[in-house]
Length: 543
Image 1: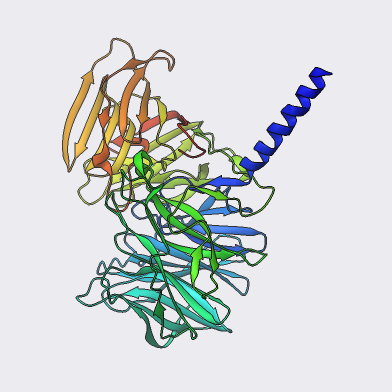
Image 2: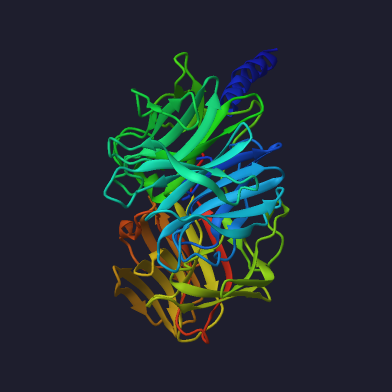
């Protein structure tokens, strides 16, 4: 009888607790550096993409059915559109008449000016065809958004960001097929305060058209990005800015007491019951800053005074109610690639073999990214091995990197090198071609190299008595690195007792990525047996 009563008490206490936990999720909903996210719903599925900046492939694509669990399924482009050179920022998805559009910002290779291009895919195939430039006005045009106002398509964008005048959000009518501007551009909103204005999202609710936009500094540890709103009874304006702006912001910097340093540049999606959820990016406070600008989800609503507010308040927070009852957020998992080219999780196939950014042959997992501004990569899968090499670009002296977006602050990654030659091959923590850490083998020498602002130093070098093929990097707090090597992958020799501090690897608009590296002649490639990244959770779901 006592046992029965104890069991009943246990069930009474435990199940409400489990139910309560499953009614919340934790931001970010997509872990890792994925700035300026765009989100749409087509049927029962949600699609998101984001800035890829100086990493290829271009604009990662994620899908979800519940807004809190996402799977990467590909990229908008595997190869650069013909007119572009670099700086692939702020893509915007739009679905219209059975076609998915992506309006994106990139630098034009002929003059290095950033303009807006457009690509389309049939239905939800995600097989995009580029149609070239659509907005090439002024000294810069970025951050496109497309809006359907009673059957008339409009495109809006940020203008004058590089000019000695206030930034403006401009708009223009679009052709019915969404591929051409029609008529003269018009001004929607001006940055009279001169605090920045970009990343706009338009929607209408009731009598008002609303523009959500971001202001202040987008990037880096001093970012103070926030979200603001303006409204009008007509799409073309005039717009009134809300006196209570900002409506969403971070805390007080990296060491502040808020969950986020800053937050901004997003779009919202309307779910079937009419609610809106805003997907933007945010820098988390503390060590999680080193994961970059991660996609965060907040529900928004209209107040009794016909303004916009977020249901959990003005400060961005990690813990949020789930959008849909009965859904539960899954933990992120580690990564393993044995380079067999087999089907990936969820039945999706990765990219094919990369050779000068031409795709053919076996498959490489979709999570891999590479340093396209600095090297023409040649990555081939053959007999369960990765053959990695590349041709340096633009004076790059530090090789070809194949990397992943970091998703937690505590993790380790390791690889086995199957060949010996004069090239350096092994692991890296990569910022760019002039800021990186590389740990591996060149000839018979095990080396740890650090490159800072182009100056290289060797932190460790040894010639082991036995052949070394396994290399491992342990990461703590996102930027403290410890290095080990092994002949068999089980007994490890630690190189450094004091972790190497690598915060300097953070670039203005992106953070460092862990992965593989080859430095040397193309005729002397790296042959890699496997790569494994294991996550060590500190607290919460995604840290």
